[in-house]
Image 1 (cartoon, rainbow, N blue to C red):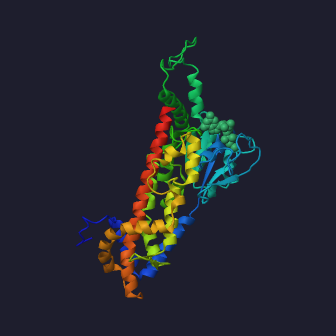
Image 2 (image 1 turned 120 degrees about the horizontal axis):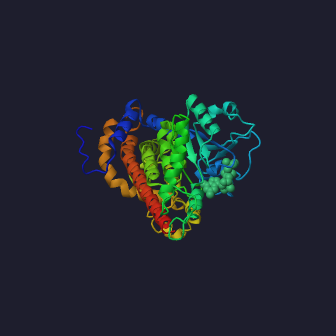
Image 3 (image 1 turned 180 degrees about the horizontal axis):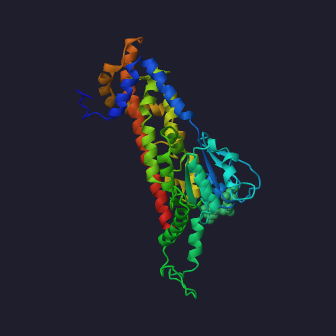
Length: 422
Ligand SMILES: Nc1nc2c(ncn2[C@@H]2O[C@H](COP(=O)(O)OP(=O)(O)O)[C@@H](O)[C@H]2O)c(=O)[nH]1
Ligand SMILES: [Mg+2]
């Protein structure tokens, strides 16, 4: 923006300032805030449906649980080890983000379900994308289904499940020093046990069959239901997010497990894009003066926003306890690296304290904001208050988001270190 010396100020990204300016362009503060509120609500209402399909026994139901962060015996988990005999479609909403629904489809390839009618029977149009799972190479009906999905203009992803089992099986062929045991038959196996070589062989074998069948995409993601941080699961999460239409991307991203640095970074960036909208709503709708501060805002809404950040990054007692159980790392060790408050500690008083800390940096923005917040229909005093409140709220939210993302990253590092020592 011309004439603005922002060198010494905390930074509000140019695009956020432009967006704010545009929001005020056509009306006053109240109108701009109402529009921002609507935009946030619309984003929250977006639903995402995706289907998990494949042969019976391939690990569909397990995957449906794993991707929702559930153990197989948790409440709301899909039943495991059940052979599908009926055309039953089961929707499984994410426990924390119920607008994300994973569908456990009946197994393909059984006499009841023929590839050509299968998609019609399962209600093709409902799904945003498909995950096709196999615990061996992909068979004819997996491939036919992929081609059908592709032909009807939707995306599919091949997931090769149970790779932990493959690795275990291979290990039995090697001695304790990792040297291939004597075998009578000639073998292509390497002399020294190598996890990466085994995974590569699985991948190549899958790809070879897909390419022979001329499937549009021969990408295969190797996963284990027991360890989502390993193999290709983090990459799968990334690809799903990247290939989704932007308005659906946020819904999926928020629901994803925090198993990789890339996912955490993407979550942070996504949440960052909404901060100016949240600030606007906070200062323009149910705003009330905050005692001791020269600002007006909706503290309740800010409390909710901070709690949402915590939930998205797994920074609440329930998530940490689940993570501790899963990784067998004591919860105290996880908490030791967390610097900002957990969801349970977020109160109105805490928010006021955080706002106070951001006040001095924000005041410098008020003159800039005053240039483009129209006084139309508003009491001048209210506009002046908003001009200070907006950047104060903005910095408070942004600082908290940055801190929460950094905490989540440190927690992930603890988990990854723990993994390495096992
Ligand atoms: N070792 C291992 N076993 C798995 C994995 N995924 C599923 N299973 C097991 O495979 C069996 C069938 O899984 P299920 O999810 O019921 O398959 P579905 O019939 O396709 O829904 C169960 O015993 C699961 O515990 C995995 O990633 N690793
Ligand atoms: Mg099942």
